Image 1: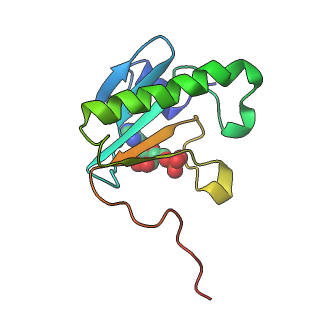
Image 2 (image 1 turned 90 degrees about the vertical axis):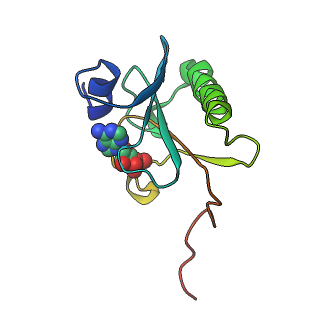
Length: 117
Ligand code: AMP
């Protein structure tokens, strides 16, 4: 299976890649929602959080630690940032290749828009 992000991982589609190792690739979101908006993706295609298994525990931990490293590099760590993984339709997932959003550089406001009462 291939995905848009798998093509970015392999360098077949241009991207602003900021980090890559044998497990993950991180690149700037093409439509940033904050001054820093980076996507951390596994190099191997895993469609959604629902597809994770216990074998992926180390990989998921690594994704979070890479996000921490990039937050430090972007100088947003101290002020704070947000990590998001969307899953499926109700989660707002658009690209079906697991990815962790790293967002920061401004106050991000409420986590979720609440429906009007
Ligand atoms: P999600 O809604 O969690 O699936 O997020 C998908 C994200 O991928 C969105 O924030 C898009 O702006 C971003 N995106 C889509 N295509 C590209 C691309 N070619 N390069 C970088 N980011 C992209």
